[in-house]
Image 1 (cartoon, protein in one colour):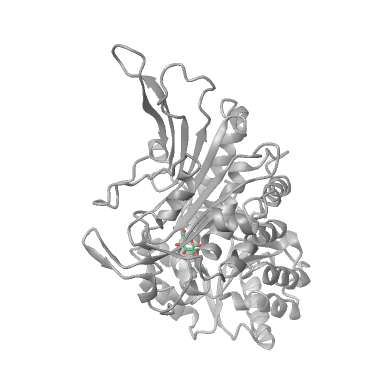
Image 2 (cartoon, protein in one colour; image 1 turned 90 degrees about the horizontal axis):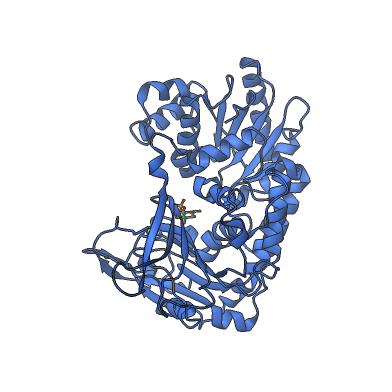
Length: 499
Ligand code: BG6
């Protein structure tokens, strides 16, 4: 892994949850493993009043003891961390930011290379770049300037275009890093290596040999304390429009001419732009939206979605979405992709299942097991190939067996967390694993008819917490004589999730 040139990080929204839970731990782990530059500072910026010292003390109080954070190296790391309290929506206040940055560049004798991170509410995504530009903090005269933008990038197609225009007024596309933490996951990146580095799979990866593809991202947790945000978002905006469509692009894209930001993202966009637009009939037949209802799971009472804090009592927000979709290109024409995600499902699991077509002439048995490749994104990361083997003994019955690889077998190798990998890439100027503007807009364009259809009051089914979503979601696949894979049938133990 390349160590970045001397550079600095400014985190807007520094007093918020994302910074405490993800960004500081990720930066700390990069620091203790020697992956940050020799000279760097991190400046946290938000409205909450803190001095440098009290901010450091607060981070220490919250984080030491968690996530392999040891007191002594964490104190050394915190010497690089500073804080500035300003009103981040007031252009004039950015004069103070400029002043503080100049002092820190001077103190560190550092180039002005700076990565800005928008870990703020989305209402500030358009405002902060404008304020930075008003003080020429976007100018690259004495070092590069890059901007990481968190999700949600827009609320629908129109607002995503508007945000894009705002960002592009002050930053060039090659300065913009739209983060999708699923692209930071080792197992998602491995989809490219697995597909394009293995001659035994790539020739089969198309409509001639693949019957259907499943993409599942299940969570056992509910909306927790994020009801206020989630109720205005739903599973479609929270997970599907971004994370799942990005994973789908990695599964379905053509090989890029090279692994770099332009070539890889060109292929991602092509596949997203080839998604077959959803017609009114498709929405009626191939889309299932659900909302969880109260239930007792493994002895624990779980409230229904409408009972959650911050959620409207008559909310029609979906916590589950299942969709059958198609890709209109010569590799995938006619192959259904069944994609589902939901909260309060039986367990936490994300996986891609490739179902290969049966042999054209089933000589041995009508019921020979089908061939499947299960790519487990999380947890218990790994890959399993399932195929038929002759049942020992007389006759020619076939039974299903498996060959597997698990990341845990790599022993000591430590996988970088998604935020570690993505922060490092942004510091190194590598945007390959960040969503490009045209890809984000292609995703919104595809989901826009679903957003409009959600207004239709018929379109929401209940499902009890701890089940695999509404029964209509099962029917979505079964009526095509296919089936979802249910990796965790045994509801008595959350950790049981067969790979
Ligand atoms: C976030 C969503 O982007 O992804 C959350 O806002 C969701 O609602 C989370 O829980 C899932 O991420 P992961 O990495 O735990 O699968």
